[in-house]
Length: 544
Image 1 (tube, rainbow, N blue to C red):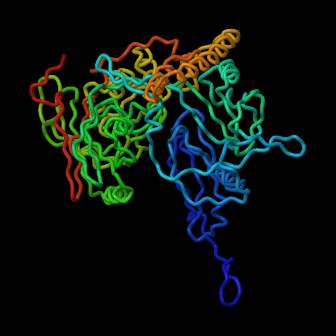
Image 2 (image 1 turned 60 degrees about the vertical axis):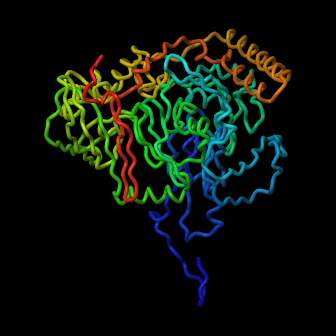
Image 3 (image 1 turned 180 degrees about the vertical axis):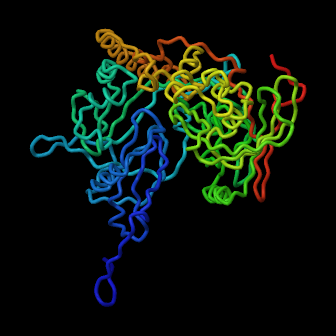
């Protein structure tokens, strides 16, 4: 109702005008944000439901679950180890609380009472605190990250309410056996509302806050440096090497462009203006301010930007200009695989051959749309996949390797065969997967998670507690904060509960981390940035 000169006027807001706004966060959470016509009181009820406990790229909740979140209050996600989310106005009918540590509270009948959620800090950034979690070292042409402890944080999802922690771990986090989580409880690694979990049978309530401390390992990337192409008060432009993700995702956090620029070039609070696949190299732009970021995104929406790529493809590409307009469908977001399909989204790419050496061709690519893996999928369809593309030039696609869209197997069979091929090569990270992902039921052919005897895990939990105590005492004996920080990083390299620590993985060769696709040029109405032509695109380049 809205007051007017003759009484009250009822204002009906169409449901389709109430738009949900995505909220960038470590866990990919979502919030129901009401239209501007609604009052602040209604806006205060819009809640953020919790997100995945293990990864930073989980999908948002369903619409029904978001509505339930808005009804129960303003529960919001707390960033895990520093991935902060865009903050907004927050109102709550709950009484003001002390900003100190949460206290466990109990109702009159002894029932556990959940404290209201904490406020979030504004901004999307990583600070020196996050950069200091661990350090890099270089070995065999690879950039490596020393293993480190990391807190995955989340508020209780709607579907978890009324279920025990044991049930949640057993149904949604099957990467580890239940005996692991029992040992993690004994080692003090699991916290509920900032209190150590004593029993996995505890039943979760709405707004419960969970923190899970894990020992984190990151895959190596190329040791090739990130070179700055340009920098001013608005923008940073770099030449991204192949194999390095742009921002934290999946198993990658410190081995990302965002973290490397922050740690080695003191460039922080950057806004990515476009994306490049992890295996793609070349021009990558970041805005330094939100204003400039919005300006570029408006130019993207108005189709004022031009992107130019070069690649080396299999065989003799036609010497005339070729335009491919085949629609592209995502087969699996988890594995990151697409294919040409009439049900897919419209796409258009223009190709022009630059050279041919008798075995492979260098091709200029102008994508007129921006679909996932667009250039790679269109080249596969044309029968000239990128020479060393680990996905779209794989035998898993069948004898014709997807040429003309001919794939003699179902999507499930294709994913199974791709995963099996890279499992055999110990190169699952090419698919942005690890064994933990397979344990959650990606394909039927995957092995169950590593099981350990309960007695063994009890011993490991006890050992973990002792190691933590020894490390803490040792760090207190060091003379300077710098020495203490370096020792703290070194003490994190092995963990008795970590299954990854007990695996012996073969390092990839540096050349295996390079795919022959390079973003050569990025041009707008008032700017143009160009990176050098890669070695493999030179006329005199020869295959090994």
